[in-house]
Length: 165
Image (cartoon, rainbow, N blue to C red; front, side, top):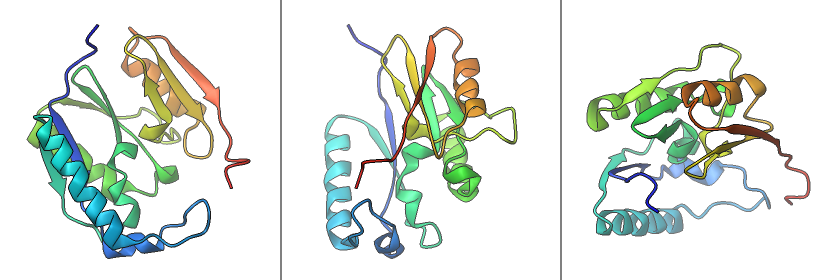
């Protein structure tokens, strides 16, 4: 069974400021290693026949490399997210522009200013969705996912960061 077809990948190059991102275990990020891993990822994606859209590194937003936080895309419709409790507006604005102008898909926005969602908190199985509810995704955000794709069941799941360290 084939579930959709991937045509594009949006990635962001690694900024030098990425070394300042807090890790779960408290270690520093090796930006050169991260850049090498990024180049490998791009090579693999292009090898799969995807049109890879590379965003320039954003020194003002070290977490901009996590473009998957900014949108959920299913069946040619994108839901623009509010990751980082809404603090990543520049990142989501960039992803919105790329999705509309370069990919040419419909971009939906969250209805409520209080809606928070991190795209990486959404799991789509091909027939249903699970939305992790925690620090960066709230009930209103999960409802935004459910309302954007009403044809799929959407189940919220409470998640916690306890025990990750």
